[in-house]
Image (cartoon, rainbow, N blue to C red):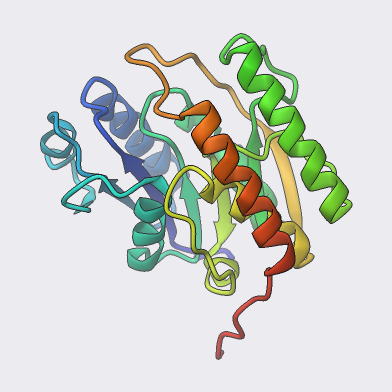
Length: 236
């Protein structure tokens, strides 16, 4: 994959205070790689200046018009991405774009999907005890159903070959997209690897994840993805 194009897809909803910093750092990192790349911001109906700020950078900006959910935004970004490898990163400043090169290394060495884990060799202070417990329970259920042990099923930081994405029949609209990606990747036997990533607490506002509501949707998605994980057969 020497001449692979890399697409970075960034879903965003009301992140005006971090959008500029995330884009500046991401552009700097991608320039340092010396590979062709594109950055796609999908604004999910923000009511603040997120869309305006993103539009001042040399990136592709897409808009959902109204708030439709993280899963919808990511799938829209995937459809527009022209890269051979797609990186997803959150826009709230919790992820460090400097980790992108380490996320890409396994892809260039044969992995199909690389998932950034917030729980491998890093401080756990970035999230609440309740969220850590929820992540542990979800990881445990996934392990029972797939036979594969993972440490962070809910990460928004990934690198994945586009040919793999094109085979997955993704349906999620909200935060459960992370779980759907994880389960369908594992169930279909794609080469999956986790890499430790840095993660910081949100500096502005609280997480938009609704623990009970989104937790129930995530559990339903695990079961649905486990029993309906067939892939598309994409023509060469």
